[in-house]
Image (cartoon, rainbow, N blue to C red; front, side):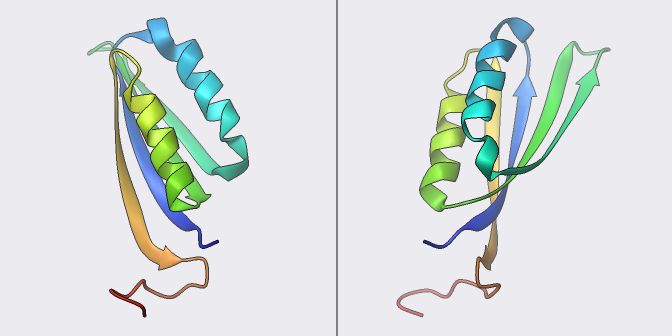
Length: 93
């Protein structure tokens, strides 16, 4: 199964669900290749970047679970590079 590199950007506006977020991330630890969190004390939020190398369905499932948490937003950016290192082509190629 092809895997892709993706970045999930997360903004935490209320820390009451941070334990749930960390639990979800722990479930997907095998796919996470990097994580960086930056607190923005002035605004009372945290910005977290999660870098994954995983199949599309795993990336989508993780992003969806995170996005369902109250006061937490998530957006995903997918690379065009597949596991083989080539760009995905449209159609059968």
